[in-house]
Length: 271
View 1 (cartoon, one colour):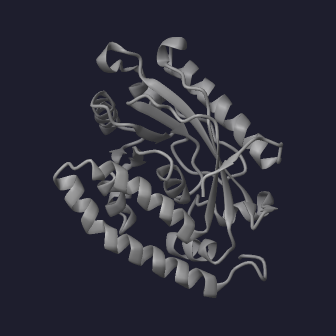
View 2 (cartoon, one colour):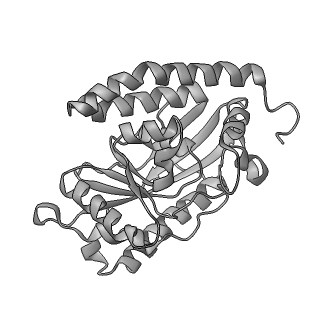
């Protein structure tokens, strides 16, 4: 349960209603953009997620330089469905999601309309799904990969799965694919450090029920989310998926640990 005085139905209700209403209005616009392959299919989600961050009370702060290469494979840690809004507000790309997300009400539709790549984490289908990732990257699309393969409690980064880095080996146009590690950390609530006991109210993991969790989180104050874009790398610089995976994990885990301990860092507010 949320500690007494932190959650407010009077705050949650308008946020959720505005979020749903805003989404419903824009859904048909994105449907048309995707069906007719309009440039709007990439720019509208970016604009949409930026406004959703404000609606849901997420204040995004950034550090580092986002890749200017296209395609880029962004490799991030994963804490919550809120990560979609946060990273979607910064990157005009598509997410790589587990296959079951496609069947979720509302969030599954949104994922499809952002042209997400749905993959199996294991089994015979996994190789085919990774081929789809490669095809999208070779076509010039930027992809956002949650390399842990699941979400955690926000207090630490889980080990990255090297199998998910197979698409990093491609060479679009004969050039090594750009890979950029990205770290995301939920650090403060209304300007006060969250601490390990408050952070799970924004993290979504295990068997948490989605609707109830979102209602609780929306009833809280403004959450500060720190995002850091780390220096870009390529597969060629490491020679193996495992080495590239380990490098990305080290970059992301180190930055998350620094953000959670409050080490001073130069950040630029995004919203």
